[in-house]
Image (tube, rainbow, N blue to C red):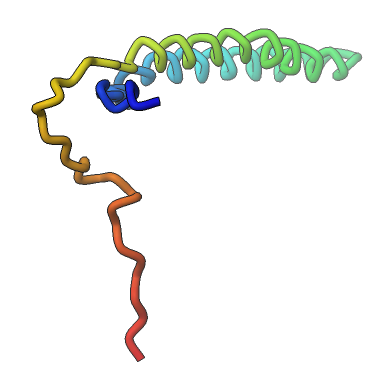
Length: 103
């Protein structure tokens, strides 16, 4: 278990890395809603709801796969020398002190 301390684990994912994926999925949902509105005037509006449900159901696994693979591509595990002094990262929640009330 002591071997894990010899590695540095960093996630370099930023919002810009997944921004395009979110835009594509929003376009897909918008097109499906436009198709649903077009079908809503038909004699069977159930087809409109089925169209939206089918598009969301079929596109969601692809979106989740894209997010997960993007996340895994931005995880870095690099070896650290034993002589290197490890300091806590500035945004680390575990190093923060709880808020004290003044009364």
